[in-house]
Length: 113
Length: 114
Image 1 (cartoon, rainbow over the protein chains, first blue to last red):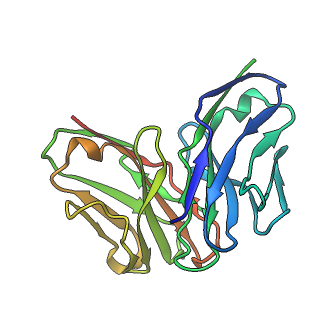
Image 2: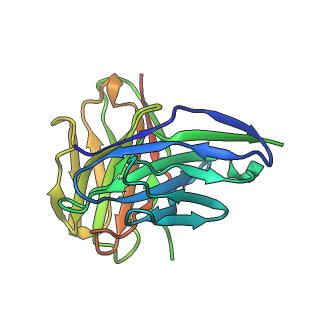
């Protein structure tokens, strides 16, 4: 079945550091890929998405590129801010079937001033 | 537009007791989903409503869990009797047309079973 594997957290960085959160997936067909973010006390919200191979999703300085050859969708940001502290979830939606998104375990990011 | 609202935000109960979680989706969203996240693990799918009908309940762990969506509006998820392993955060999400539409999530209901 479909699955998403994320790097274990927490990831702790200083402000303005470079961020990478790894995500790899297993799915049949050609899934759409997503990153959701959950800020403290709030629900998950979509951060970015990519629907086909080599697409790059971007938002708020974050980027992720859909790599079919490595089945990966790593999240990156060049310079993190304290306000980026949150839990980040990688997810996929299979191209055929139930349209139920599959999520990873989430990676907590803590950014210190 | 009001978001997805979940109640309660946190519930602490003893093993064997009953808890009912409520989700109010965004008005007009026919699709409603329940997910659960056990501490540090994946957000796992529980079930999916389209209006008042259960479209997919393959993720429901066992018959101690009962979900309803009367009238296709709000939904409740009842756990009876609760067990220790039911502890976690229960998320509700809704979407307008299902399919590849992005889900809008509530803030979650944290359940602690002692």
